[in-house]
Amino acid sequence: MARGSGGCTAPVRGHIRGGGDDCPVHGGRRSRYGYGYSYPSAYEPAPAYTPPPSPPRVHRSYASRSSGGGTRRSGASHARRSTVTYSPSEYRILNPVREEVERIAKTAIDRRDLFLCHAWDDRQGAALEFYNLLTGLDVKVWFSEKDVPLGTPLMRQIDKGLRSSRAGIVLVTPALLRSLNAEGIADKELSVLLSSGRVIPIAHETTFPELRDVSPLLASHSGLTTSDYASLEEVATKIADTVLID
Image (cartoon, rainbow, N blue to C red; front, side, top):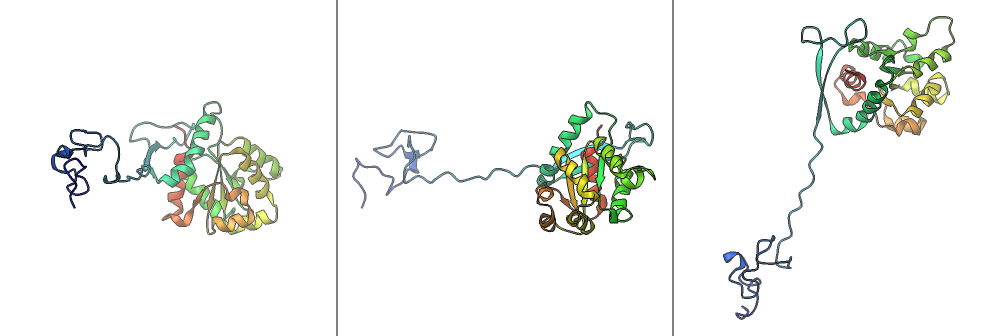
């Protein structure tokens, strides 16, 4: 039943016609809600919820260093340039390391770009492959197979390598998990890297849940899993872009 002329018309006639101007109660009372109300009512539809947009993918370009002198070449004919795209997840993982690298580079220009922590059993396998990919992208990598002279104390050289590198990666493989369980050399390298806040774990032929069973502390650091990528080269490219300084 319709209400009398003195009542609100919204339940029967609505406030669509005339924007509510024909309502004897609310007519002429316009507001931001658009129906003649100065406040929300039970008859007014709630505003639609719009979720926040996803973070944008991030693009960053870099040019490789020259083969000598440790400086970058300029010009398209002298530099290999690449545009690297990051997903929001990759950006959250890698950007904090990038910020630390940039901070350190302001006062420590002579450091290596990266320290490669790996299991001894991977020195001629996955670690060597990753080292070759990174150096092919002109990343200066401290790698025990190349940087520890015969007859020198291994732990002392590792200590120097850690100190002289702006960032570090831990190549997490089944061999590394065995080494960590045995508290081998990789375990000592890892302890220093974790305390620096500049470490990127890279799970290769294993998973972070498996790592968590062995080293919850390392697994708490977000990292990359090579099975998520088309190739190791793609992973190396993202790491190179994170640690190389223009």
